[in-house]
Amino acid sequence: MSFAGMAGMAGMAGMAGMAGMAGMAGMAGMAGMAGMAGMAGVAGYSGDLGNLMLLDALTKSREAVAGRVGGPPAPWDPAPAWLATESLPLGSDPERLRQLDPHVRGFLAEQELLAHVHFVPGADGASAALHWLSAPALDAPGSTASAAALPVVRMRRPGFSVFKAQLDVVESWASRREDRASEVLTQVLPQFSFWSSVVNLHPNRTPKTLELITVALQFAMLSVMRFKHALGCPRPIEFSPQIQPVLLTPGYCALPSGHATEAYMFARVMRELMGQQPGSGVALQLDHLAARIAENRVVAGLHFPADSTAGRLLGDTLAGLFVSWCSGEKWQSRDFKGDKMVVADRDFVRDELLDPVGSATTPPYFESKAQAPLPAEPASPVLKWMWRQAEAEWKDARFAVPPQRPHA
Image 1 (tube, rainbow, N blue to C red):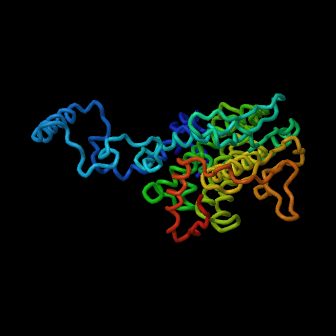
Image 2: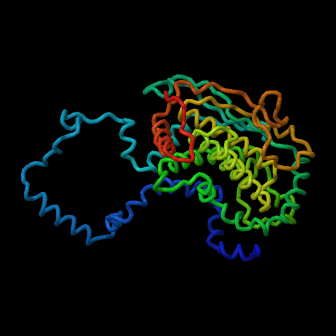
Image 3: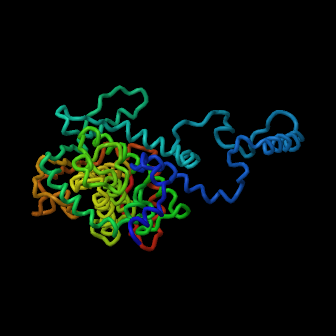
């Protein structure tokens, strides 16, 4: 099928979604997928405030049923402990997390994550850094302890000459658009269909995994947008009208690529959640898929290869931090030194080392430093609970290696 035909299949509905190309606007809905099984039940009670017939019916039903009992409202029998002792339950009880709506747990988790990160744009307008505020005392009620900042990711953008050289790559890769048209169009929003084809995600089978991944991707996108704005790297179309992207160019800067960040964030978090080692069959498939997603954004004319390179580093690094916050694993802080890129660095190289391994070194524009587990990990009771619930969904999966990670 021609590209024009594929574009027609997407229709104009996709155009309306361009403002949400970062993908996160609709991500909160993934957490709600776990509730789909209940849709076959009381559909009429699903929250239609204008259902006056139902309102009347419920009012009459209560009068007929409860009115026969008489006297003051009777307590539950047997009563929960707090009701039996006539004392209100404690707040922030982790055991009550399972009673919350998924999107509410998501709000709590995001707040805990964001409370511990600090973004610092460079004074030169060409660099920025994300720091983790490491101070367990901050979590104590009434604490005024100052936080020590641990570097998570530091980024410096490439020079003009690198983007100018890579513009030829973007123009050359336009020849692949017809071949990849269906992928380009269907990967505008977060790529759950593609990820599910590798690791068998399903709202009924893996609801807690989808919920956890949603939180991780939201955290990644909030971070990537800060870097995009601080680094201010133009899109290919801003260099030349000859690029002519096949999708509406988003209204924000290019580097790092949000799609690359999301894809590599997912690949790393999912690998850790399933207990897979780097280089395993599943891990390789997820990495290859992440690279393909990143490359497709260059094919579409929306990104330079350098954007994908930076997004890969950012996504994997944020994933390591996220996993450490959930489960107490060690993590790596990293630097993307775009100013070390040269004109010859034209392509996105999917298998470049992010961290040194033995005598093998990273490219000059990557730098990493091993970090100890986050203090008092896992410091987030919400994320700790969400991680264990999601992890349990994979312990019985026939194609997953049972996680051997010790819990705090």
